[in-house]
Structures are given as C-alpha cells and as structure tokens.
Amino acid sequence: MKILVPIAGPKPAEDKAEYVMNFAKMLGADVIALHIMREDDQKKGEQTLRIFEDAGVAEGVNVTSLLKKGGVVSSIAETAQEQGVDFVVIGANA
Image (cartoon, rainbow, N blue to C red; front, top):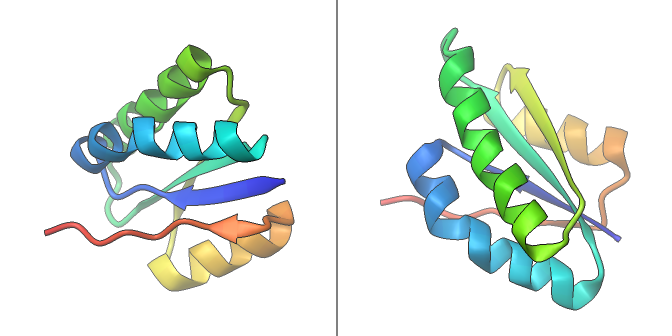
C-alpha cells in the first residue's frame, strides 16, 4: 500500500509527520512525500521533505520524497497516478 502526502512546507511537515508515520505503520504502507514548489525555493522543499524522511526512519516506514514544480491539484493527481497510490492524505493549514 502507498500513501501520498502533499506537504506545504516545513511547519506543516513538523506538525503532521508523526501522525502520518503512525498511520502508515499501522497500515503497513509506504509513504510518498510530495512538496510542490510554487516558487524556485528548492531549499525549502528539500527541508520539508527531509522532515518526513527523518520521521520515516524513526518509525521504520519507507518514505519516498518527490519535489515538483507546477500546479498543486494537477501535481497531486499526476503523482498519485504515476506512483500508483492507494490513499492520499490532504490537510488544510490555517
């Protein structure tokens, strides 16, 4: 099973990584962490994905990190199809 998790930035990643990893571990799923760059800020994207990678290592969950540039909705849909995901976790940030 594969879970796709689009992540907006470092703060949302810190807030959600543990919850997502616990959920994935319970299901025996791999996590695909996706950060979509709205601007050319690759450093922020890499920092965001590293948080999920580290959480995956800590919980024994396989995490694949993807950094893409493009529209949010289209990038999520394309990635879900390309990766053959079973579940997409989408949250809102206030």
